[in-house]
Amino acid sequence: MSAVQAAVLALQGSVEPHLRSLHASGVDPSEVRKPEHLEEISHLVIPGGESTTLHHLLKLHGLDQLIPDRVRAGSLALMGTCGGAILMGKNPDQFPPRFELIDVEVDRNAYGRQVHSFIGKVEWESGPGPGSGEGVFIRAPRFSKIGDDVNILARKDGEAVAVQQDRCIACCFHPELTSDPRLHRWFLGI
Amino acid sequence: MNDGFQSPLRGAGLSEAHRTRIGLAEMLRGGVIMDVTTAEEAHVAQESGAVAVMALERVPSDIRRDGGVARMSPVEKVEEIQKVCSIPVMAKARIGHFVEAEILESLEVDFIDESEVLTPADHAHHIDKNRFKVPFVCGATNLGEALRRIGEGAAMLRTKGEAGTGDITEAVRHLRAIHSEIRRLTTAPEEEWMTLAKDHGAPYSLVCQVATEGRLPVPNFAAGGIATPADAALAMRLGAEAVFVGSGIFKSKDPLKTAKAIVHATAHFEDATEIANASRDLGEAMPGIDASKLPEAERLQDRGW
Image 1: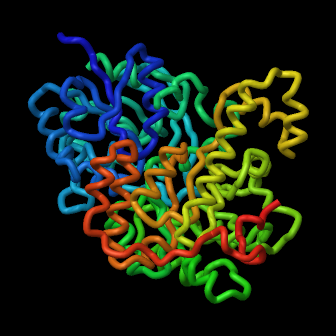
Image 2: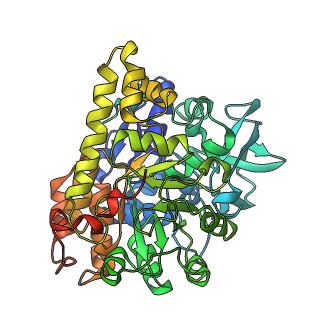
């Protein structure tokens, strides 16, 4: 396998914390804003931010097609957190349009507005697990449907909050807002 | 750009409530927060890629024109805008008016701006923001003011550029002041920190933190006078982490186009070709007022203590 070249989609959102988590995982990440920045990249993180904003900015340069195409061609591993996780799933006829890379439906703002944001304990059961960790949930999304081929990485109170299918991860909370790089480290190995 | 690797994660060591508040500010980085006064404007903002909206009764340039006492938006106005938005909705409370803030929190707005654009309710004190669950953004013209607001619990700061003028000059001055004062702190030997805290009128613990980490403990955004895509990119280049645009969008000739262009330029703020593309065929920007010609009584940035 060729060397890992990690990057963070740097159009909007918590880019710098993800860069820090990747750095803490032993790589030197770059930033992707345009198609040419994606060329050498093997692992891309789509940060939280607003999924509608990300959609508009991805579309400007065709990254909304290029990123899922690269994943389907097998040359890119992709991790989305919060707003990024929303884009990974499939919700037919909902805005913003999804990448349909993981067989899940992800509902936006499913816990409610900011006053309902919270920090809670999550249990890793596969992937970087087993073990528990801290989950920072900010206006977080929720999985409303999970397909049979989807692997559950972490749960909170029994409910799946991070999933994986092939070389894609969708995580409803913000591992980059903690000093725990386990998920990023594991992502770099898929 | 990525020297952030070296500074610790923001919020480390703070309470869960405070980390949750700062977390939303982190999510808004690189985005554009737009002033809106109706559900239709909120639609346009969301459609253009705004990362949040500020629900207002009047945009700052109209507040400036109309004069009188400017207060919190009517409850039904905030609710009308919340109804059509999936992105975060912010609203303004008067400086020191903690009851307006409590009302906004009960409406579940996502962020409260304790704003000098409204007429201050208290001429000596700000709101004790630590006791709220909802995060606050406050204006700051210099490092001391920034650290006082953070001490009171603000989860985000912004410049206090002269709102409603379309003149970027004051926002630029505030960004430059804060960054140059931070640089000065990071090179000062430890025995000077207490005196610097005294000079800045800032909490000593926060002065120590900034001296050690080399940046503010919460994100700092630009606000006031941003009227064009180039203005937004300039603010980002000077170290703002996102931008607020008030009158600049809905007082321009083509609001949707202007809004999209400012979102585009903010995301690609280091790429002149992209900013040029964003700026093409925009039509007229909002009419401006030279902020340096404002009589003292009309300067909003002097409100706040």
